[in-house]
Image (spheres, rainbow, N blue to C red):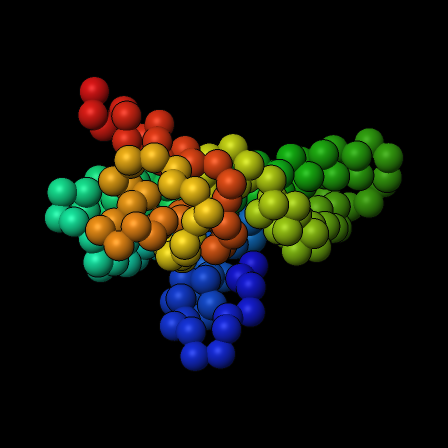
Length: 201
């Protein structure tokens, strides 16, 4: 879910418009798994994955447009693309899809052993439960996933109280920090140092 944007701020196509709902396509597909062919479920994963890829490319493009020395531009773009792709792949595709899959599988099993409902009723009940679970798991997953990778979102520029290091991924020629944080959150850690060191090896 995206946070309210400050008045006059540029709208993010992939976070602030209906396009973001494409990231939930695989969760809907998993909810209907017991009722539709497997190909339909895989198609839903294709839609969600396309959304993730498009968002990653968009964030890389925005990172490349930030004024900075040319030497660190390609590395910064790479970090923005990979960072966004990993975070979105986990938060929008892998974890929610697996969660809905297991919820539906468990509910179908329980209904099959605890009730005498017809199979069609059990399948539709499982699908309904899966769909109802989607809005419940969105916020917990969004809060948890950024604690592992340095989840990315809109690039923010801020003046820090102390220099984090000589990392070109963090610093431009004006001495401002380019913070890549999940959904615009300011993070106290600087994983970019590890990324930059790996690029130098």
